[in-house]
Length: 136
Image (cartoon, rainbow, N blue to C red; front, top):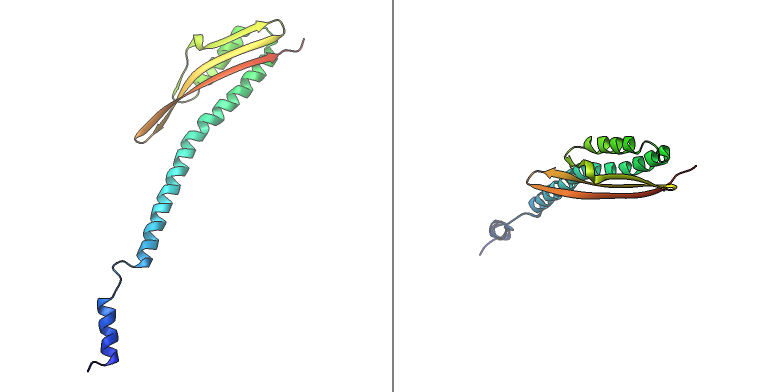
């Protein structure tokens, strides 16, 4: 007859789980950390593109208000210089239009900005249309 000590030892020897739950938890944690780091990396690379776009819209509005339908060519050059200051940006001089109609300054800007990630790139197209009423 087999003693209970030997039975327990045999059960422990042959009935061990194939994978330990502790190891699974470590693998899940590593995968979660990799995913979170990847998302943070993409946000850090993409967020400045959108922040620059919205700050450009605000700057265009301020330039249009300050111009008061004078020096429209200077306003156009300032907008072009600001856009060209961004990295990975494509803009042509004919894509920036500044016009004055009676008491409104109309500004139309089209430009493209490229997002470069390892193994992936994407070009964003931006369009700014502003009609700003000037104060006379």
